[in-house]
Image (cartoon, rainbow, N blue to C red; front, top):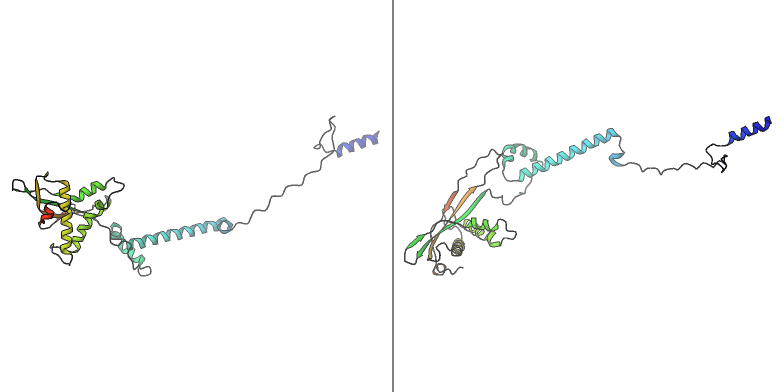
Length: 259
């Protein structure tokens, strides 16, 4: 009995308590353990990620320095090519020292330079009334009329945007400051501008259809664009006028033949 008890004790010792149990509650046969699953090896890290944390910090700082230097260089080159402005007037020497002579540019970013003035073309007329008398109208701001027609218009016409402006530019290009022609197309530019303003006057009907336009006089009002509030620059805000002589109309123009 001692041997049987020892054998039963050994059998109980050999049985795995983790094994399945029989329906009667006795221990069943021990199941074989499953082999551990092996995950695939992760791919080796490349680039900055493959560096140690200390070198990663150094690489990030180096990239930041390169990015800042490139941004400063592009800004300096831009300022050296841009028209005179508040920044270049205050820091122009630093910009020149950075760009020249190693990074000198032989081209201009803006050609022509953007206008820093508002130029309005205005006209008045001398009208022969039905009773034979002459009447001089007040000044009509034709540029303001074009601006009002363009403002808020998603598809403004070409004439509203460019007709009057190009006519005035044409006149300036063919006349000196004394309003005398300096080129072969001087008379053509005068005729072109005169017909445009007469057409506009008849369209606006400044005299209510009670007379015929005999002469017109054109002037320009040039006003400086004011600098932003944060700028220390100060420019005059009063308009400067350029007054042309009175132009007599041809019989066709006086009769409204240019409409």
